[in-house]
Length: 315
Image 1 (cartoon, helix red, strand yellow):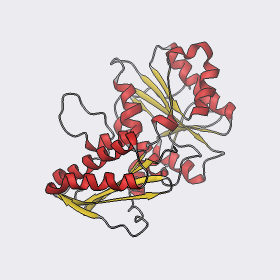
Image 2 (cartoon, one colour):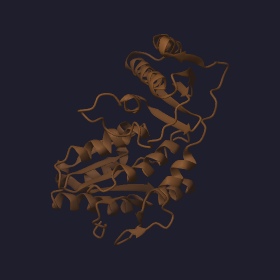
Image 3 (cartoon, helix red, strand yellow):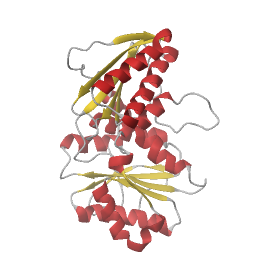
């Protein structure tokens, strides 16, 4: 990775086609950080995590390794729970390096828009900071759309044999955010949204948890859904016009809850920043991102829809 620009924030995509290209692009990046005494984290899918760890050998001791399939299963959690959490924990005045691989071939079509939005928002979240985030993309297993979107969400990129990053002429993160902020498909089945307001928040939460139990959600996951519903419905009352609608259903091995209201989210990083310790409030959507398996958001001037997925675990 010698040749990566030394500007405050650096965000290159790494395009690789096999294991050798993957290691050639990632291991020197980590080793350079270690040699410079820079904090470094590697958050990639487990199989790639093992490749990097094995290649580093004894030098891997001070690297933070995170399996992105777990830490980043909800793309909305990656910024607050992984990237910003790691960078914010480091001493000031030192460059931080992170390898983050949020897009892999196993991502579903439902998850993918949230992944692309995450990649676009990295540029805003770290603007002006001494941070380098390297994002690998498997060109042999990902479809052409994912590769094209990577050029649009990363200002620079590296390919096999690159001695230095190249500027991406397709870089347009704001356009990507707008493109993937689309209305969500309607819920299947005969269920109907239930209206709520300030006087019926408790009833809405009980309605949601009762429905989730009928669909088979139990234990901590049921508690997580109840927390998400409580935060979203309260946000609707406080910030979304004083009322909203709630719907809960089961689909493809998940229990889903959706809240709609007349508010408009104007901050693209809402719910994606760690909460300041000295500030009360403002944690609602962040908590939802931290507990849900997937969160999708559609917002426009006339209103906002937030949909959450909770996986039904096998028993």
